[in-house]
Image 1: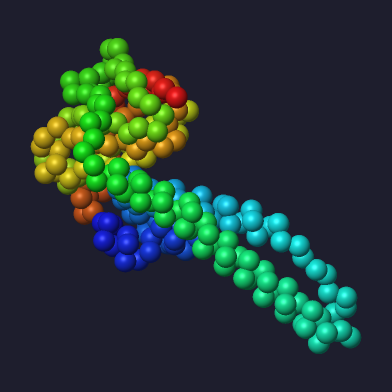
Image 2: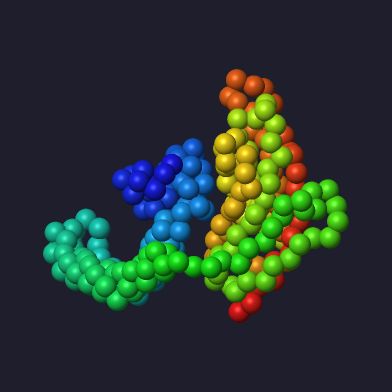
Length: 229
């Protein structure tokens, strides 16, 4: 999935509402890990939805007096309540978008368009099977670059780089084409949800669809991330 497809299909909204098929969700996750604009849109929309849910919970709810005998009067009683609740929710959405979401997105997009010098960590000729782990220190919200050489083999059509957090869980993964793997690969690590500790980058070779068998692990690199507030 590329950025144009994500915009046209309203992928951010479908992702947050759980309306994607598993394959479509995996493709979008691979995309937004490497797309700063979609990542910023996803964070802002998620924050908006959380706030809207909290605000809607604060509206008082009236209980109908009966089920059958007063059905018609109950409807008349609920109608203005629904109208006011809908109006309040609409005003809340509009105000939140104008005050928080749009300025926030405008600021983030402006930052993305501006030149930026990012800290980088080279894993080229690194500790694939041992040795001291490299280290990098970055601010909490700042992205950084990982530089790595993929050990290529002719039998692989592509490669997958997977980053594992200090807890051992998968933080993200990104696919590298055979053509891209011919040179040193620069991976932009997002600036969100970073925790200090020891990380592991695992590189696997992906067979073509006609071949049988799982992806083959080719190398793994350890590095230490230090986070500044």
